[in-house]
Length: 302
Ligand code: GDP
Image (cartoon, rainbow, N blue to C red):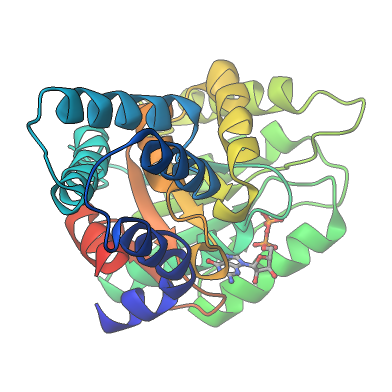
């Protein structure tokens, strides 16, 4: 908890401390206070609709004199934010299938931290005694394959790859066949994340998803989208794009250590209605946490 709390320091400074000082010494809830509050919530990347809802809630409370003093309003806002996160996070834990390999397809835009996250998740599964295979289905960039191989070496797990430019879905198809035949417990598939080229990434991802199911019924069991917390609203627009194409079942939110915009967690929870499985709080192999909303809220509002 201490480490999580330390890594969320930027968000806490920009949000919780500001929230505190906004209300400090205030005697009543007036329009000025509500305006300042609105600005703060937007800056923290809570998103427009979440911010609107919180303001509406604050105005209602103030009007009904249910909250006569700003300190009580502040507490109510914290509770409200916590409840947004909680609602979306009911089944955040990954559940492995009863038989056959647990197949996780990892998607997201280049640079968000996909490969790093795969390396970190692999470590978790290795630590709990599972055999793990990594699959390099981003055949577009040679660097992507070599980077994944580095994570394979760190975890001492095999990386399934083909030559640069190979058809990504055939790589996935062959890898799954091997994983099923050799009874691997967990397969993590890295995919391409180029958004700004002619070749259609979404069609490529759809095809990968389809062929995985051919070699292993019910798979992929998880389509995990990696979002970079520092990109704010952009990350949410990206998520909608990916969701429309392949349907995401879980989210990993990376780089929460490097951002003051921790409020994005509430925004993602509300807008995407998909559980956040993990959060990335640093570049090292151990800097991945299971997302526990209670722990997160406590660390943020500490
Ligand atoms: P990919 O292109 O999506 O596969 O992204 P990479 O895995 O190559 O990561 C891009 C950069 O983000 C690298 O420098 C990583 O070390 C860094 N990174 C990934 N996750 C985190 C995180 O949780 N915190 C921080 N601070 N950096 C991260």
